[in-house]
Length: 381
Image (cartoon, rainbow, N blue to C red; front, top):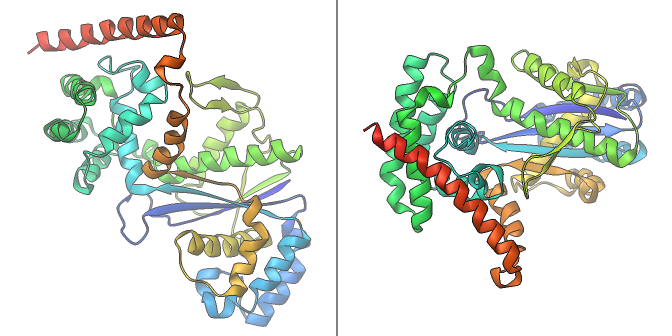
């Protein structure tokens, strides 16, 4: 299998550009090397339009109309698949805050179930409801600031403001858990390891790299479904994030074959089909596959943003629609995905007395552990 990866909506560490709130990755795949088999026909289209490459944003709808039906024909001819992965950038700032501050492995005021089971998503969404854009910006600024003396005071300010807003939550248990976790973080900010250690590490926590995790898992899914190994993975060349993407891809390549549970009810970390070939970088000027990826991504992005497109462009979407894989990292996607999971939980009366008793005993032990940490913190006041 041959894979071609492009991105759109790139704003680097600036997560709050109102014009580009979403980062997109598009992955085009085929059993054939598109750089070879599609080059002749793309050269003809370039010649027709008198351009050195087919770049959707430069061509615009008017000129795309004249070439996209031909691209749709190529998509069918070479049995292409197109997948889209998105990251809601403002939401990423809030999710990062939760992952650092509410990590039960470092913050003992958080319940075990509040981080290592799907209950984490309930707690995350409750916490997220307390953020506005200004506070999310502060949390993100502290996250990407490598100097502790500058980052930690901002972290404390964010925690204090969130505590002041906790009263807006309707249920007492959420108010208690979030307040205790924020209090502990305020009293022990250096234990949280909230901010990055260097500017280099900052790249690793941006949506570009987080979204690239989805790309790698998506490629593994395609390998799993087709039974074919990756022959090449070509990523669009851009200076800022290629090195971080390469580091992540190498990590996954070394993790090939690894599979483990992330906790009861949680997704399985499945790296069994991660690609074994190293990724490579290219400009779309030298890659017909990346040219095609750019055209696909521009059109799919417009559709996902509910823009109106002429039928000539929608023809390309129809080729792929029933077989396109999509994934999204956002608070809305988390709520939608896990609401369905919680709806399937059996009612208490449907559980056996033994199972209920065992569950309550585990939760009582964890609450005792948690309260020990909370009381010790209060003793420091």
